[in-house]
Length: 504
Image 1: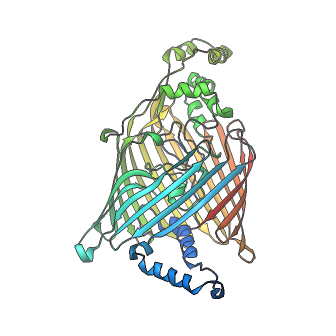
Image 2: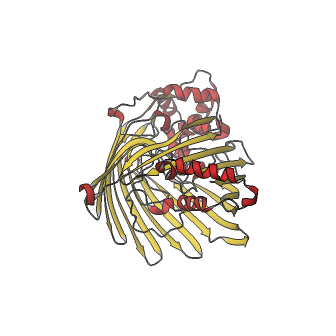
Image 3: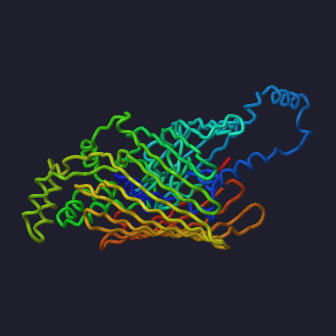
């Protein structure tokens, strides 16, 4: 199997660490949408405008008059609401030079959006082909808009399968727990591509013109937990092994290295994957296992203040090791410990894992965002009462800051500090995205240059990855040449890629 067994990425977290997102070409402004900023939709809106402005060549001498009359008749017979449906889509293909760990991938997305006076309906289908192919509903939602002038309404609501956003950090936020990332599409501005829409309900209440209270209710979906998840395709992934091998306990670190980390190397053994699957706790999608969250946000001129609280079932499980194995390793000294584990993993009937359990947790957070001249500044603080490390849970406190600047070169830098209180452990992360203004090559061709650098440090272990890219664009066609370089080849080998994207 060519996938890792927990959703890891180098950039953000989903209860672990990881979620890479687009290096947005922005200075963080006050947004009209408190939990999904307008800049995230900018690229999609541009594509829609291009699509609507493109007209077929006017060559009346080649078109029979009767056909033109028929076309005009069909247009006049089309219901007005159909004419107002906005349809857009995208096709993607990525080819990897090295397929030792990851596979070539393809995706097709088509979306339709209809906006009435006080409501909006969105729907989308997605086709994905990587390790396996699938066609499914990507998004389907109904959203109401408040209209104080007509109904004195001070709330909005949205129901269905959609993407929501809480927090202000672009790369390293832990506040948004509702949608997992599609890691291989980390550079997309369309939220329905960069994240996997999830079934949920959201209610926005407006106490006054500057503040919003948002309530979320999300049922548990076993398809999108962080075990055998869908986010690991295409590199940028080697964070999770260090959660399993930097526990503050020498024996557990050895066990994690011997038993669990090999799952990342060369795709792992099929038998080991089946064994891990057999230990996963079954969870029903009922109300008891739902995630519930509340957020309060204030927008005042160039400043955004927010607080959030979430109670839910963790998407990242707690892996418990057989206590007899821990005890056996503890009785040994020096190199005998490693020799015992080397022999243990070769035994056909070994059973090192006692259970893989999901659990409820509470998380509270504060966030702030402002602008200063051409600088965008943002910060988040979170505290989670239960976070899974190997064999036990720990409290987790994080502090993240970000700064971006737009000139001829766009820079976006974020830093995050993680403190695992129970284990007296700390981790540090940094992500730096750099993007140059496009160069005109003549006609409609443009050249785009960008690079994303990520660095993480656990205790005495550090990892780094960089992803430079050169993109040639022509109207709605992008052809990108990329090179993924990683400091840990055993988890993510260096590879060149060619990515093709067509928007319509």
